[in-house]
Length: 443
Ligand SMILES: Cc1cc2nc3c(=O)[nH]c(=O)nc-3n(C[C@H](O)[C@H](O)[C@H](O)COP(=O)(O)OP(=O)(O)OC[C@H]3O[C@@H](n4cnc5c(N)ncnc54)[C@H](O)[C@@H]3O)c2cc1C
Image (tube, rainbow, N blue to C red; front, side):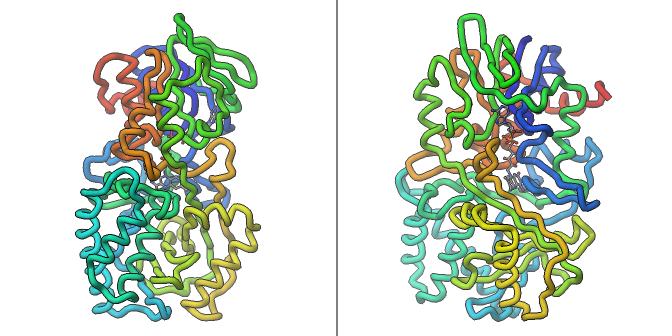
């Protein structure tokens, strides 16, 4: 065997596909009984519910923009997937739960824009040990705004790191979202986002139900031990999530050098969960992409996204990130649904009906993820992401969203990390078009 790829998420499948296209012998070892990893569409209700990734975050300059139509995947514009304050119609509610009129909405968006412009300057002179929270406080102090006005933006910043990093604003580095600019529209997938990894996997040798427990490097290459036997190869690409690496679920022999072990330790693994509620009828405004509650009344639930466009059913999606994301994993489904309904009824009245169905994710306690995505924790940097890729001794490569400093925590970052690992192994540039061509060739 030339290369073993550990993990059949988008990073592992991209690397495997490109190596396969170059004529290499590749196997993919995947612990789950399905491919896709954190791209996972539940179709049991007859429509798509993306329990993991659902958005392409910015079509401009994104490799997914060309790949997705090449695989015949339908998309819908939905440019609110990155915790924007404006850009698309949002039913914003003030701290007293009153709907903002057009003027008040404009003032709110202008406040976020003004604070963000100042925030950029604060971050520019911020070191790796400053938290997003501390930088936000310095920024808000510089605005000179009254406490209520500043508090509204403070809450927004808190929710931004919960959603974008799955972590509390105090734990996230001031620089964590430097790479987070969204270029172009965002889209979601009526047919489900996991159609992409499923297409990438077609015709590859993917061994599902195969949990890797150890990776041993030697002068001859690598040995990979699993719960069902061992495999030898010239190189291995390990794409398991950062949470799995942090937990030490795979034993590396010899031990990983500091250049890789350090980033595993320093980077954070956030928790970001989704709660989908399907209602018997629509009770919210037509034409809005999202409903949002400002200020302290927005804890714990603050944003609901109208994903009816995906399901064809009246359906809202809300998120729980950071400490609250971890907390809901300790609660029953009924408790979580009741809590979301309390918040919705505070906005729309007691007439909000009980949902007819719900879907709740628990990525933090999923042993094959142990979190949702990585983030730059206080004391780490974007360089830590790239350092994590290795290679170690020329035979052990890492890929996955956590290894891609330019776009961590995304599908396209994970895909590009798999591309980078394949290029490093092949020792030459490889066009991403080969993904499409190789899948077609095996159909
Ligand atoms: C709730 C949620 C929402 C998200 N929303 C978006 C979004 O809208 N847009 C976006 O761009 N990104 C989003 N993301 C992030 C995106 O899903 C990930 O960045 C991306 O899918 C990661 O791909 P990966 O290949 O790096 O890892 P994974 O998809 O996690 O693949 C790693 C694979 O390794 C396997 N594995 C683990 N341990 C072992 C083992 N010991 N042996 C063998 N196999 C093992 C796992 O089962 C998994 O299949 C979201 C993530 C979550 C959780």
